[in-house]
Length: 173
Image 1 (cartoon, rainbow, N blue to C red):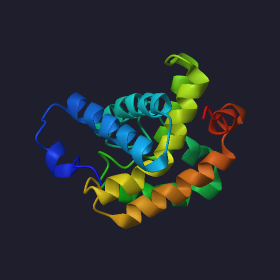
Image 2 (cartoon, rainbow, N blue to C red):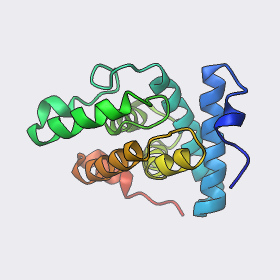
Image 3 (cartoon, rainbow, N blue to C red):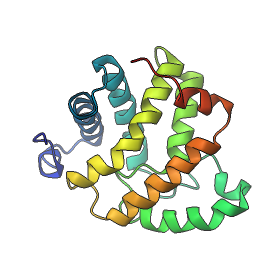
């Protein structure tokens, strides 16, 4: 395990720097622990840092600009997202909310960075590992939140539209 954890993170007070540092540290972890190619991991880390910065100020995932409004469109998801929202609001700074992740991946695909489909896919794939990584380093204290988020997020990958299905299946390694 590298030395980057919640204690080291707390030494920086600027939220933009915190989010960027978190994204970069996670990218290093993807390279070292998951064997990702460095370009793919760093691309995911940069995008992840930007996503986390936008999420740090979010007070309600259903009202955020990145929300995909899934809860209002899908009756089976309403209760599950409501329960997840209650957990998420207790520790929202770092735990990626599945609806906001989908919205951000869509934004990157439409507006985004160099190699948009590859950037979106790298970000989308990286988030699957993020919750556990954050829990191990003390950024998230509630393992139930990580488990619920991961479970819901993995289901959302399978249920996403054609563009996100395409992104989730791109591999550049």
